[in-house]
Image (cartoon, each protein chain N blue to C red):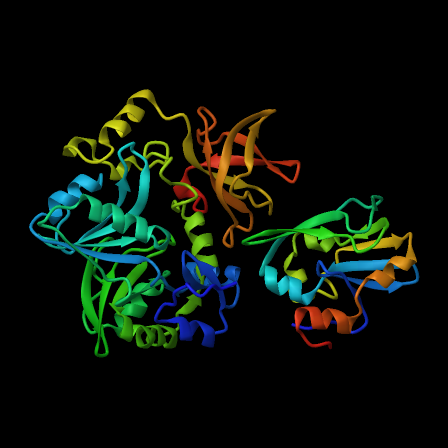
Length: 129
Length: 361
């Protein structure tokens, strides 16, 4: 398991990759490993406005269900439709093809409340790569 | 996660060495998965898997009164069970509720061996001790022995290749002893996966060596997660989910182990009453056509009306959809009925199927 160097992280184990005011959100390598085989990902419709820390969906592993929390306030522009039948992408490539939603941020200052890679790495006791 | 009181099986070091994720379960520290639940479950459906089930309780019941004692405490036909044979049975309470589900082995005319659920072991032993007479001896052999399930279409061939005697021609629910090298092993043609295979009992100090021989022969180590997924696919009940002290064998679909005509036994009159009045709910299999997993406690709807509750559910590694079991009130328990599962406020349609057909049709 590893923490990606160029991302921001929430305490509920979501990651955020920011380009301009567009944020891509997924769950961390640590989170997918804790959950085990992911078998279902429930994501919001594009066009929904999410408040920071609001539930935006859920991931189900064989054993458990976990809510997904939006790390930022913004408008959902796109969701990863590949996760409809290829949920294993979240396990195999959590920081890449396992991404979940793209959010047009409404408050860039919220980024400051998220952890950087070294802080998240310390939280989960895993190396930064 | 692990408190100081949790117990370790003789195979603990093997699990750690294999990189298992260990979790507390029924007072034991057990492997929930090694490579991953789906991969392990598929290995059992296509080849052979091994499970450490040493946490299950093992109790020897012997003495001249053993048969009469078990005949009264369990509803199945103990007197008709031949030496070398085993059967699935229950411990029922005075209200016809299920204290535990168990496997009973008949060793000889005056000697039996019980395999009981880990989470119920203390309660079961207390119940057995409170009800037996002077001519019955109970011996808890859980700690002195270990138990490994070898399951899958390749299981019989695998054990045959290792065993000193013929195990191939054994029938379902029979047992015997054999040797793997110089290790004595009791083998029983039983399991909890829906596949052919064996459950093996050996002395605690032989466990690591037996486990190692099976691994070397190609068996895939499987944890409690795969075990649960496989037993749900097979439609087998689990105490605390489908059965418990507040469920009776009629609604649980377990009347095939209840012999009402064998004479009196604990709970018989209560069970008879339910048979005569008809149960208010029935345990069924439930299958979705999508990757939605019905989970224990989820309500089942017909229109706006709640008509049942999910008892267990899993993403089926074999079928790639959500499967489960549920109690449904009549007439919704009928094969082919359609009910809705409420998952996070959204309805998903499920079809009622016989438990044994969850993955087979």
